[in-house]
Image (spheres, rainbow, N blue to C red):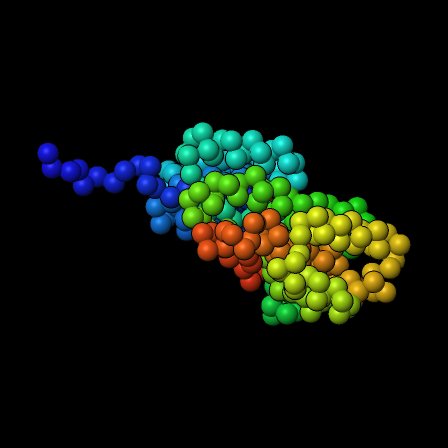
Length: 272
């Protein structure tokens, strides 16, 4: 009997994109779906997530589906892993895009932001936004909860599926996550020592950052302490989660991991 030339549906790649309802996340979903990948678009807000999926369906991309996910909830991440395993039996791509900036934009709502930024260069727009933003301890706490712990929960829940499919993991970050923003050399060296860095130590460092933030001890202890978006800059551990989560020496050849991207996140008024 002649073998059918039709592709086996089980061979179709499957991707999960967190924070996929708008901006970078939605564009990633669009490009993946356009390349023939089945995409699970996740977002905290069910209405926005469903609308994003409808928009992509309207572009002729039916293989995108919505899954409501709060990345900061470990139980939710575990349920997502169960859903993917039961429905698809595989996961080829995980893109950790969900994140917040840890600040609030103080903008005069009587003037649309587009008008306020009109005619400004990219650098002038950035400076304007920085001047109209405030940060609080509560926002710093939320930033760590979503950007670091959320990335960790989702990665750990889905990693077994990724490894079994020889999958790819991408954490979306920005230049604000570079170690150059840390003022302490000891802290930089420790975060750069991938082979010896553990998830437990990253958890501890995140808690220490919040303690120092509350006690106004960021600079003395080597954290980012200058200018804006302090909690977001301290989220360098987000880039370190995959390496610290893996049985690294045994599995790094099997898993193709891209631990960070230079894609820029949007301003706090545009958080996913």
